[in-house]
Structure formats: structure tokens, C-alpha cells
Length: 588
Image (tube, rainbow, N blue to C red; front, side, top):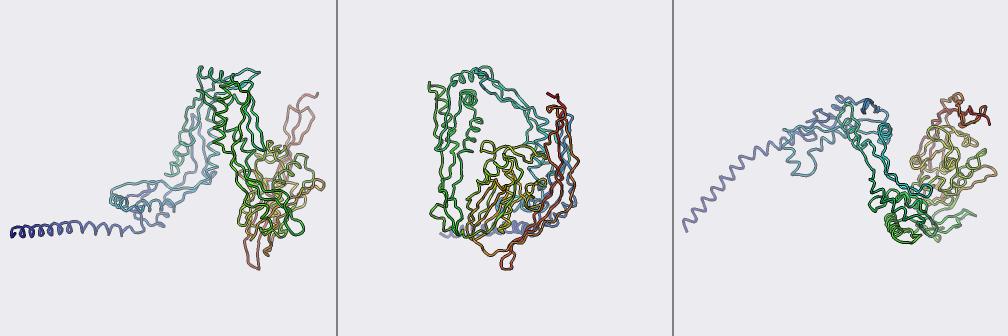
């Protein structure tokens, strides 16, 4: 027993000595590490560089100053292809370095919140060389425009295989290879150049694309196409019917017994454009001090695209392998009930007229009047709930010949040309005027490129709003306590369009200044262009002159003497040139 006690005492003594040893050994290390961390409070840890600039030990403001002093932003990005060089000016894409974000990335490098990882990283920090890239901002859409322009000049477009019916005979084209620009890789390399402030030319990355099919595959598609001759595919819903004949369904064939997914998706997209609609709340007219229903609520409809694709493929296989001449498909549709039903109409706070806008369109060609009437009808009875941001484009929907619009003059690519839906901007302009009259906050508005005579028939310049879906929109917010109701009226006899907005008057007061017009510029001289397709001596005007000007209008809304919001609308109208075609061709 005595021996056991003595042995236990020896073990305890040994453990005490061992513990003391570890305390003596590690205490200085702990102290040093603590001092090290304290020394870098609110500072970047050691071994961190940004674009080869040492930012170790710097606070945020110091780092921002160091970067702004040392970094020389590139003036351009040069892209080399064969013996050509394409330059993209950084100003053109609104490029700028974001030094605060760059320093923030360096500062948070060893402060992730993961204790073990941060501890490990901080231990290695004095012995590392971590070179981070600069953070930057730019207009990606403008860069994409420039890169697409370069790609169009350098690429050799591949031609996909196709099958078509020519004079009753099946013709299979095997396609041809091409060379495309690897846009994703190019953007990554440009990003690297920006991140490290380099102006080294970038070699245009290319990739070969070969969609061609072999002779056996072409024969297979031909045989399948022949089996579909005289057959048709029909897609149906309650309100729509789409019929695809032999010449269209054979284009859906692809190699190895499969079908052309992209072509099928094109069909599905067209079907969805016609069938899809948002839930339609009850539509009302304002008569004798109250809202009355004139059309019932409608369920929202949405085509189930995945299921429809499955059905199309299944029915195509059936047509190929059977003697059936017609395959009918019921379009799968998802329904959404409207939020506001007919019985709810008098609970929405629609009490009185709160805003009105009007415009004239005298002198419009018949197709323009048709488009104005059609597009204005899309807004009649529209209900806007409190807090909702209303989008003109979302309500208008697709504008094309497919949806009933006719060709009239529009502004496109710096020219006045005939295009589907000319006259729609008359509707957006009139709604804009009603929004201002109602004192509602305008979220998005864009002026036209040049002064349009229609919009100044009964108004000063600057009270216009252009739209071009999906990029240019007119948006406003319902910041009133109740719902808003939009009503429209088109009178072809007086060539007038009226928008009325009904809701609850909350005592707001609207102040709109007269337009301030500056920089008035005369239109350029008329331009005459020779046109051999017109007989000699014929003159045909294809564009119309307009004076240029800069216009600004101040808009302020108050209630009980307190300002709710204010905004200035700017319009920069370019001087516009009249263009004439001068016939040089033979006279019949």
C-alpha cells in the first residue's frame, strides 16, 4: 500500500512539471499571437496585395487612398484577331474602379467568421503573397453590345441541319461547320485585365462548332419526314386552336430518332404568347358616382410548357409510327384565380376622378389610329392596388402583327420607319399626362428621341413618354390609400385619346412648371438619296424634319403644405433630318 501511495505522488509531481513546461512553452506564443491580432485591428492582415499594390496594415480609408494614387485605369481594352485589333473604350461602357469594395475584400480575407479557418489564415499571413483583383463597375449591357459586334465580324456562323418540303419533296440539308467567339471566356479575360489594371491585348478566343450530320443520319431523317407527309398536329384550348401541317412538323425532326428541341420550344413559345394571360380582375366603368361592372373577372392562364413539350414529342412519335393523319393535343394550362372578384367592386376605395390626360392624333394614317385604339383598350378598366408599381409594358403585352397591330411609323435605330405597333407611344404619352395630373410618383419614364408633332397638338413639348418593350417602360406607383381604376376613351371623329384615373382623393396638390426650353437647334438640311427602284423624277419622303431642343419640367406634389415628393423630367430632343428618296430607275 505504501509503495502505491509513493508511486501516485511521483505521477502527480511529473504531471505538474509537465503542465508547467507547456505553460512556459506556449504562453509567449499566445501573447505574441494576441499582440499580432491587436496590431491589425481594423487593418488588412499581412501579405495582401491588390493588383500588385501592397495594402497590408492599411485601414479602409488608407487603402482607398493608396489604390486611387497608384492605380492607372486602362483607357481601352484591345482585342486582337488575325491582323485586326478591336478597341473597346472604357468610357463607352461606363467603367470605374470601386476602391472601397476592393479594400473591403482585402480586409475580410482573414475575417470570414470561421474561427479555425481564420486562425489558420492569420498564422500564414506573414509568410504569404496574396494578390487580389480590383473590384470594378461597368455597364454590362454596353460591353455585351461591343463584344457581339466584334463576334459578328470574326465569326463564321455554323449552319444547323434542317429538313424542309420543297415542291412536295423532302429535302434534308446536312448543315455546315463554323467558328464562333467564346464570349464567356472573352468576358473572363477582360475581367482579369480590369481587375489587375492591364492594357495587354487580348487574343480573341474562338471555338469550332460542327453541327453537321452524316449521310446515314440524313437518310434517317428523310425517311421519318416521308412518314409524316399528309399529317398534321393540332393544339387546342378553350379559346385557341393551332394547326401545324406537314411542312411545319417535319422541321421538328432531329437525328437518332429524336426531335429538334429548339424548334419545339419556338412553337410552345408562340402558343404561350397567345394563351397566357394574367388573372383579370373585374373591369369597371365610373358612372353616377360609383364603379359598375361591365365585364366579369377571368382566371389567369399559363401554359405548362414542360408538359406540353412531352405531349408534342409523344404525339409526333405516334404520327410517325401509325396511320393516323391527325394528332390532337389539349394544351395543359395552369389556372390562377383573380384577386378581386366582381362582388368585391365596391370595397376598393374607388370614389372619384383624380387625374386626367389627353392627346390628339389628327393626321394619323389609318393603321396608326387602329394601333392607338387597340393598345388603349388594353388599359381600359385596369385596377391598380395600393402600393403596386404599374408597368405599361406588362399591361400592354406583345406588340406585333401576331397580336393584331398594323404597320405605322415608329422610331427605330435612329430612323422613322414603318413597324408593327406605330402609335403605341401616343397611348403611353397620354397615360403619362394622366399620372402627372393625379399627382402619382413616376418610377420610370423616357422621352422620345425627337419632337413628335402629334404630342404637341394640344400640349407643350416635354409631356411625352416613349416605350419599347421590354427595355423602355413607363411605370408609376399607387401611393394612395385605395385602389386606382384606369379608364380610356378613343374618339376617331375628334382624333383624341383620353386617360382617366379614378380613386380616392387624399388632398394632394400637384405643381407642374411650364417647360423650360433651351438649346433649340434647327433640323439638318434635307437629305436626298438616289433610289433605282423608283422611276426617274419620283420623289418620296421617308423621314420628317423636327427641331431639336432640351426641355425640363419640374413636378412637385404636396399635401397639407408638406412635400410628398418632387422630380424633374428631362427631354433631350435631337434635331431630325427630312429624308427623301429620289428615283433614278427607268420610267414605265
